[in-house]
Structure formats: structure tokens, C-alpha cells
Amino acid sequence: MQRLLLVQFLLVLSSIGFSQKNINTAVLPSPSQLRWHQLEYYWFAHFGPNTFTGEEWGSGQEPTSLFNPINFDARQWCQLAKKAGAKGIIITAKHHDGFCLWPSQYSTHTVRESPWKNGKGDILKELSMACKEFGLLFGVYLSPWDRNHPAYGTASYNQVFVNMLTEIFQQYGPIWELWWDGANGEGPNGKKQVYDWELFRNTVKKLSPQTVIFSDVGPDIRWVGNEKGFAGTSNWNLLNTDGFEPGEKAPSTDTLQTGNKYGKNWIPAECDVSIRPGWFWRASEDNKVKTPEELFQLYLKSVGRGANLLLNVPPNDKGVISQFDSVSLIGFNKLLNENFKSDLVNKIRTLNNGSKLTQIDLGKNSLANCIVIQEDLSNGQACSQFDITLYDESNVLLKTITGTTIGNKRIITFPSVPIKKIILQILEEKKPTKISEIKVFSINESLIEKVN
Figure 1: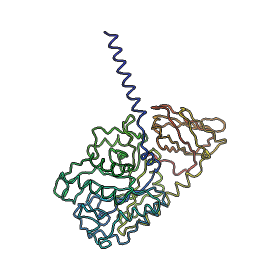
Figure 2: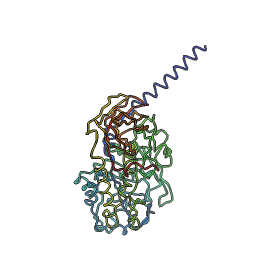
Figure 3: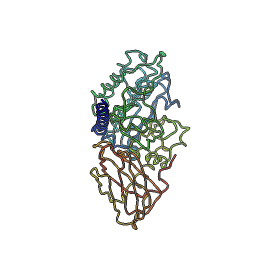
Figure 4: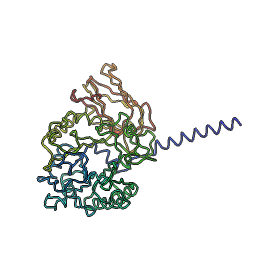
């Protein structure tokens, strides 16, 4: 009997290990998610009545007469985004106040009721067209919360929201990313809405299968758990979503920041942060725009940790991006281009084909302070611990750097040392790790990652 129990116990342990191994190796990104990973950095554009009131969350009772961006120029936004290196723009088509930046058939609180262009204007139309002109992707933020719509808080509102989604996708597509905020407060009738998330998701996937959907729990992209623009130093592209929903029922912010090593779903992190203290433009914050150097630090702590950076650039009350923001954004892109243009490995593609050890010889001592590693995500995410050892031409050990996850891109910075040889060793992995690229740079010493 004891032998039988022992055999049964070992079989249980074996099945657990087998099950966990299957989970580790089977979860892969979709083609749309792989394309999303390659984008790395793009813009948010918070724009609406709050731009004119100075509020972050509108009440929904603001008069539509407030909205009148007399110099609105979507082409100026897109031209600047292109110069700043952004890959796309996600616009707040409807924030919590319920004001629609397009003349929706399903609301009476829209640009149609505003004095802008005598009620004939359409922000979504102009911006989607400008994005196409400048080769940018077009995305939409659509808050389910609506503090203006009379149906909010009733069963019929979910269909209203579906109608709005349908309207947007059919009139302004293609839409590359749809952004759902999990906020859920009271509407004008004092009631809260029970969102039908499954209906919303199914509607979007039917209308536009290639669109990636963002929320606290995906299904395609997840919130990183903070609005400061940084991912965890350990950052898994996997997440368990069973029993969770966007908003109050979401996983903990710690979990969102790091993901789940053994997660069942491929749902990578997106880091949202504003270039200003607030999400909507205020003249009082013109002197508080993040500097190019501060934006570079955010890049290291988001893209450099395997996530994507969603940088909010709010247009002003005239309808254009302010000069204060423009200068900083152009400066940020200049820092990226200047510091990541000269790869000391001569841009040789380095594949380790699943080996635990990769060695790079630079031929001679080269002063460097930055190493960029990328995993081949078409193989999934495998590495959970690595170290990098640096040697000079006398084979003297200069430095050992340890890390956990790699993912789409891991940027490691350190004080400059004269390097000849670099050895990357995978110490722990869920399956053979495929390194797609290793690059070495000498960036401005003042730009190495600050610990905070």
C-alpha cells in the first residue's frame, strides 16, 4: 500500500510538472501582438472638454459650447509625431464625461452640438486621415463610463456602447489599438453600469480581428499597473486573467507590473505616462513638460524592460501641440537617434539558437556602457535569469551584470568600461531561449539609467 501511494504521489508530481511545462512553452503571441511589440513607442492624445475646463475628469454636464479648438490641425499633430519618432496616435474619442469627438448617432453630447466648425467638424475623421498621410497608426481610447448619457446605468447602455464601437470601426478604420479604461462611476441618473465586457470584446474582434485591445486584463495588451511610465525589472508578457475584469476586479498593480511567469495568456504590458503632470493640457503646466533627458529615462524603464511606451501628448485649447511639448519631443528623438546609432557589434545579427552561452568579441577594447538584448518572441518568452560578464583585452573581468527577464528588448546601462569580450549566459529558462539580437553602445554617460 505504501509503495502504491508513493507511485501515485510521484505520478501527481509528474503531471503537475508536465502541465506547467506545457503552459510555459505553449503560450505564444498572435501576429498582431508581434507587430505591436515592434512598435515600442507611440502617443496618447487626451483631448476634449477637459482641455477647456482644466479638469482631469469631467462631470458630463459641461456645455458643448466650451469645445471650440479654433486652430485644430491633425496634420500638425501627425507631422510632429513623425519627427518625434512615434509610431502612432491613440485619441480619447470619448472620455468619462461622455463627450464624443465624432458626431455619433448614439449621443447628443458630441462635436455636432459644439460651435467648432458650426457643428460640422469630426476630430476622428481628420486625425485618422492625417495618420494615413504621415504613415502613422491610428488608435482609439473609448471609455465605457459615460457621465452624460441618459441610458448609463441601465441594461440598454451596453448596446449603446456597442453601437458606438461599431460606428467608430466602420467609419474610421483601420484601428490598430483600442484602449479601454476600467473606470466605472455613476452616470447622470446616479447609477453605475454593469459592463458586458464579453459582448464588447466579441464585437471588436468581429469588426476588426487584427485590432489589439488594451485593458487591465487585455485580452491583447495589459496596463502596467502605474501611470508613471515604467515596467517591472522582471516583466513577463504572460498574465492569468481567470476571475479578473478591468477596473476594481483587476489583478493587483504588482502583478500587472511584472506579469505572471506561468501565465496562461500572452498579454504584454503597455506603460502609459504623460509628458505633463496632467493628462489634459493646462497652460499652467507649460513650464512642467518633461525634458528630453527625462523622456529618455522613461524609455529605458519601459521599452528597455520589454514593454511599450505610450506617451501622452495633450493638444492645447487651440487644437495643436504646444511648442513647449514639441521642443522636448524633438529633443527626445534626437537623443534616441544619436545614442543608439553606432552599434559596436557592427550590427551583426547574433543568434544563439537556444544555446545557454553567447560570446561576442569586439576585436579590441571599446568604451561602452549599454547593452541591448532581444529575445525572439515568436518562440515565446523563455529566459527568467541571466548574467553578462565583461572582459577587457587582457581578459580581466571588468563587471558582472545579473538580470531576470529579457523579452522584446532589455536595455542594460552601466558606467563606461573598456570592453573587448562579452559573455551572455542564460542561467534559468522555461525552455531554450532564442536570442535574436545583441547590440553594444556607448551612450552619453549622463543618460545611463537612474535608480529610483
